[in-house]
Image (cartoon, rainbow, N blue to C red):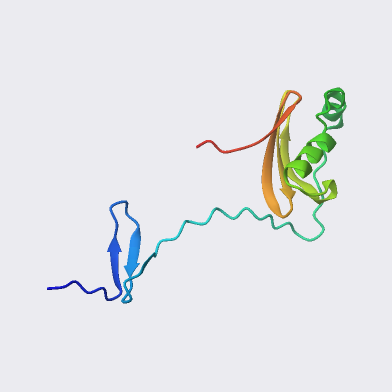
Amino acid sequence: MGFGQNNMILKTDNGRRVLLKADYTWEYIDTEKPLANKSCDLPEGFVEPELNQKIQAQLKKGRATIDDVKQKVAKDNNCDVSEVILMSFTEQKVKAVYHFCANGIKVTYKRTGYSIIKGTKLF
């Protein structure tokens, strides 16, 4: 008695589904899940929000102003500084979180003191 492979769908030990084709080949049915939509859809005529000029003046001596952050974002995302758009922010003297649109992709950067790092989700 033989086992025929006639377009059957089976589940592997790790939970992925496999299609067994009639020509004795196979392929995964469940592909990798796509990442969340990271493209930024800015409305026509979007204007960047205004930052607190007192805080920006204090950050100037440590090279952590919004212009310095935009230069870092442009360098990290291989684009021009003019293509980096500030969408939203929360800013204090000690720390800040900036949300940018760079090359059509949403990116988040954090500032702690004068240090600027790319914001990542740990959990």
